[in-house]
Length: 252
Image (cartoon, rainbow, N blue to C red; front, side, top):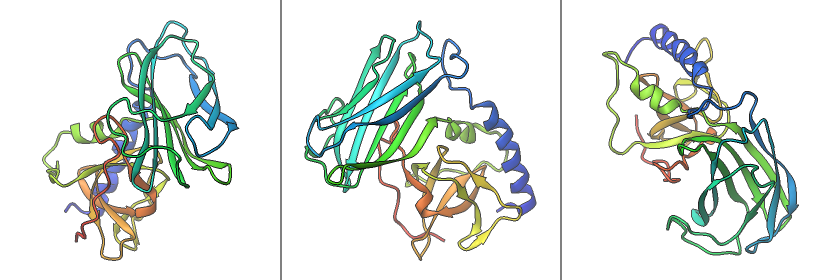
């Protein structure tokens, strides 16, 4: 295990690298100021086709095409698994939840229980993920909360590609996770780094396991092992991990 000063320096260095990767990976280069946002719910219900959202786009390049992924999960069951495209712009301004199982990952059918996790993700023409909105849907009470809107930062490949003798082997049991909230970094459970290091929501990391209290995940970050609050991480729903549950094994 490297000392604190060295790891903090590497975290800062990686932060500079990640700052350069904020531009979504795509060919050709994406339009400056391009955004995608869920504006409001048109309707909310628990049955197929009951829920619909209004979506707004800005600075979308009219010459580019996109792919769209929709994922609905509740109680560890998948209720919607859709991947469609290419969609020739202009993109549709409505988004519906319904009984779809395009990739064979669906394990349940409507109606959806609440709360449900809903994800809408956009991919570019090369099928690189670029934007997503993640929200919590309460279909019975007709409410929703957006928990992550914004660009997807491809941090995990960057972190794993960093050269150097301190590169850690990745355990076969490690699972890719996504930060659903900004996460303060701990040297060990209950002890924050000094100075404080924070991993921003939307980043990804490999999760090794959890501590004995069940309050922290041990993760691989910048060629070292650190801890983050368990509540700040959720499954990674990309094409590699497909929402695989994070490990529950207790690790030291």
